[in-house]
Image 1 (cartoon, rainbow, N blue to C red):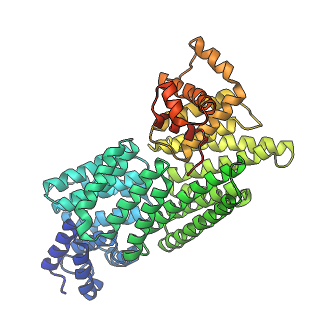
Image 2: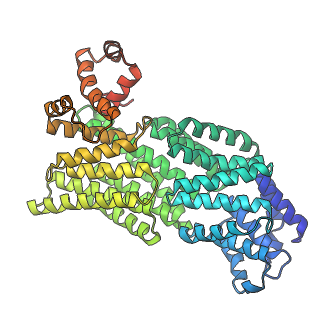
Image 3: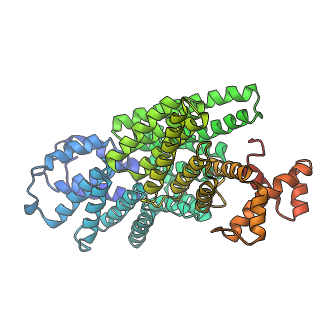
Amino acid sequence: MPLTTQLLGKLNKALVDRSVREGFALLDRSRRDLGSLTAGSPHAVAYLLCIAQWVDLGYRDFAYLDELFSRFADVPRASMLLADYVRLRLVEALRAFVAEDVEQAISIFGFVLQVEAGIVEAHLAVVAHYWKGRAHRRQGQYELALHHIGEAKRLAQEMNAPKLVAVTKIHESWLLFQRGQRRDAFRLLDEAEAELKSTGHALSLGNIESARGRFVRRSGEYTTAIAHFERAVEIYAGHVPEHPNLARALVNAAYVKRLIAFDLRHRSRSGRAKGPDHARYLEVCQEALELLRRAEDIYSRQHHQAGTGSVLVNAGHLHLDSGDLDRAEDEAKKAFLLGEEKQDHILMARARILQSAIQNERAEEQLGESTDTAMHAHLARNFAEEAIVLAKLTQNSRLLAGAYVARASAAANEFFQDWETAKHFAALAGEKLGKDDLDHLSKQLSLLKTRILRATGIDEMLRAWSEGIVGDKTFQQVTEEFAELVIPKVWAREGRKIARVAEQLSISPKKVRRILNNLDMLRTP
C-alpha cells in the first residue's frame, strides 16, 4: 500500500481506537513501502512517529524502528517544519527511554509538552504525557508519573477516546496502589480490562494480569499471584514472545516462587518442616531459577539492562537462601554495576540490600577469623546505609522499608548487637508498610522485631511504657507491639484457638490471625 495520507490516517485512528489487529494487518500489507521510507518520502516524519507507536505496542521490534530512524540522521533540523521537528523529537525520546537513558527521555518529553497546542495532532499530546509518565515511574518518581498519566487520561477523555483512557488507567492503577489505594487500583484494572478486552491487545491485557499479580502478592496471596503471572505469561507469549514485558512477568513469577521457597526454608529451620517440605523447597527453587533463565534470555536479546539486573537480584536472593553466598555475592555485584551504569537508583538500592544481607549472613555464621567477622559486619552496615541513601532518591516506600530492614538487621547481628539502632530502623520500616502488606517483607520485619524484643527484654519495654516513654512511636505502633506480646501468649494458653483469643480479648479473629501470621506462628498453607 502506498504511503498516502489515507493510510497514515487509518494507522493513527487504529492507534487511538487500540484496534491492534487491524493496525498490525495494515502495517504488514504496507511492509514493502514502509521498508523504503526515507526522509524524503511524503509525510516521512509523521510515518516514522506512527511506526514508533506501533512498535511500542508490540509490532516487530525496536531494531526495526532504529533502522528506519537511522535514515533521518543527516536531515538538517533547522530546515524542518516545527510539527515534523516535534514528531522527530518524540521518536528520539522513546528511543532514549527504550535505551534506558531515562533522564534524556524525560528532558525531551518535557520540551515536546511545552510546544503550543495545535502544532501536532491532539492524540500526540496524550502520547507525550503517557510516555513521560512511564519514564518517571521507571525512575521511582511516582507523583510526577501520576501527574502525567492523569494528564494523558484527561486529554484522552476530551478526545472521546475510551480505549486510550483505558490504557492510562492501567498505569494509574499501579501508581495508586503504591499510595495504598488498593480498592481504587483494582477497580481501575477492572474498568480497563472491560474496555480493552475486545481489542485483543496482548500488551495491555497482559499488563493488567501482571499488575493484579503484583497487587495480591503484597497481601501474601502467593498462589493467587502465581496464577495471575502465569496468565500474563500466556498472553504475552502468544502474541509478543520477545517483548520485555514477558520477561518481566517471568521475573515476577520467579519472585513469588522465591518467597514460597523462603517460607518452606524457614519452616525447615524452625523444625516444623518434614522431608517432603524440603524436597518441595528444592523443587520450587529450581522452578524459580528456570523462570529467571527464560527472562534473562529475552532481556539479553533486547539489551535490557534494568531487566537483567532484576534477574540477577532475584537469582542472588535464591542463592543466598540456599547458602551459596559466593554465587549470591557475584550476582549482587553484577546487578549493582548495571544499575550504576544507567544510574538506576532502584536497581542499585536492591543490589545493596542483597549485598547487606549476604555480608550479614557471613558475619552471623562467623566465617573465618574474628577480623573477618568484623569486616563482614561493617560491610553489611555500610551496604544497608548506601541502600537507604539510594532508596530516598526515589518515592518507592517499599524499597526504603527494605533498606531500613537491612540496616536494622545489620545492627542486630552478633557482632554489633546494637539493639537501640535496630529498634530505630525497624520502627522506620514499620512506618513505610501498610496494613495490607502481609508478604515476606512484613514477615522479615516481624521476625526481626521478635529477635530484638527477646534480646532487650519484655520487662524493659513494659517499664518504659508504664513511665510514658515511647520514643518517637505513635500510639498505633505501641498498640501493635503490645498486641504482638499479648496475643501469642493468650493463643498458646487457649489451646491455639483463634476464636477463643478473639472472644477473650474482644478483637476480630482477622486481627488475631494477622498478628500470628506476622510472627510466623501459623503454618503457611
